Length: 187
Image 1 (cartoon, one colour):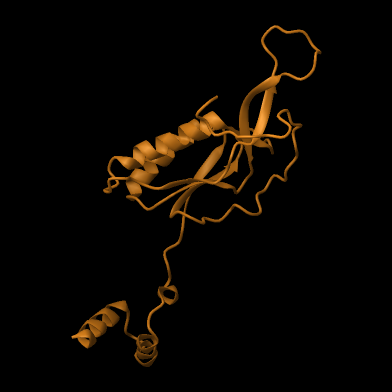
Image 2: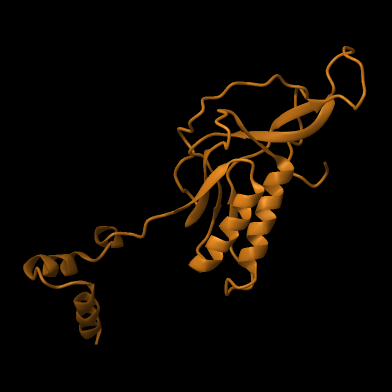
């Protein structure tokens, strides 16, 4: 288990399972990257979805490997993991009799819920992102979809005030006229 995502120090290493609501209310919006992988639900209708640390690490490696090679930059694409496997799962050894306490910790996992965006990554070519998404989709034990941050609208571009006033006077002008007007004024 060394090298995988797991907590450094736990007060109670063998925990009970805890219930969480089936729909995510907080982590359903992209915060860091341009694209993300969003959980849609399970294949068989279960409410509780679990993601092992090994699976999470494998998905991250596949995304990094797929997007690193032809992203254009030397470093590749930045990836953010927005979940952490903090729940220990215990297991008895094979062919052991019942009783004698709880088994030892076998691995760590995290609970993901519907709507949860659990991995985000930066901008890259669209065809690369779709191929990486298809690879990750085949590895995960639940249904996911690729979500994308919307491009900024005209009003979110933070244009200077005089150019907006000019647009109010001329209703048929667009962004192309702003670029040409600003280049003429700068000369």
